Amino acid sequence: MAILERDDKDSIAHLRMNAPERLNALSDEMLAALQAQIDQLKQDPSIKAVILSGAGKAFCAGHDIRQMSAGRSGEDKGRAYFQDLFARCTSVMLGLQSLPQPVIAQVHGIATAAGCQLVASCDLAVASEDCRFGVNGVNIGLFCSTPMVALSRNIPRKHAFEMLTTGEFIPASRAADLGLINRAVPADQLEQESLAMATLIASKLGAAVKVGKEAYYQQIQMPIAEAYAYTSEVIVENLMQPDTIEGMAAFIEKRSPDWEKS
Image (spheres, rainbow, N blue to C red):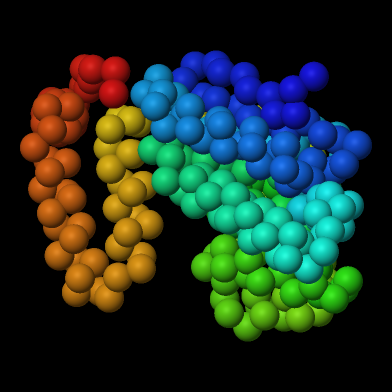
């Protein structure tokens, strides 16, 4: 049984973390499987949206603590293992944002520590109303420094710092208010809501969404004047594309655009 399952349907790829007995922890094996799928999706123009979920009773409980403890075999070897581990984890988190397709986290149960980081690293997130989120490494003496990067870029700084220093969980309703997730829905509607969002995104011109996603993450790190200069160039290039020209003509003529598959 694969540790990460993939099911493609109607230009939507559904990735399901499949290690329920370990609460879908980001083990070495899970990180490798996620990275492999990210590498494949980058080269797959037929996929226009991605849903990421977890099997069992939780979305993701963060890093595999037992595996991390086993990696500590002497100070030097332990340090090298941990440095490599977090480099691989960072590659996955950044890889999700570098995908041309928007990625939707479909979250249930709990998303803790690096699992919460995983949610924050996805472009969008839908969670069940009974879901809880936390960066609770501090409870075992390990500050969630790397999850902090994604978390602090999703929610206001004082709320992020409170979560990091108290180790307390927040409910899905609070996560939605803070901006960590897009919406909280009844558990029996979670899959339906995630699929509806993915389907709507997949109905758009893929080339435009790809350009827009890349530009979004580039401009958000820039000073405002630099951001406007950069995005002005992006939108001019977008306007020159044949499918965009067709889309504008279709709008004026009140008809559906006749787009190529892109």
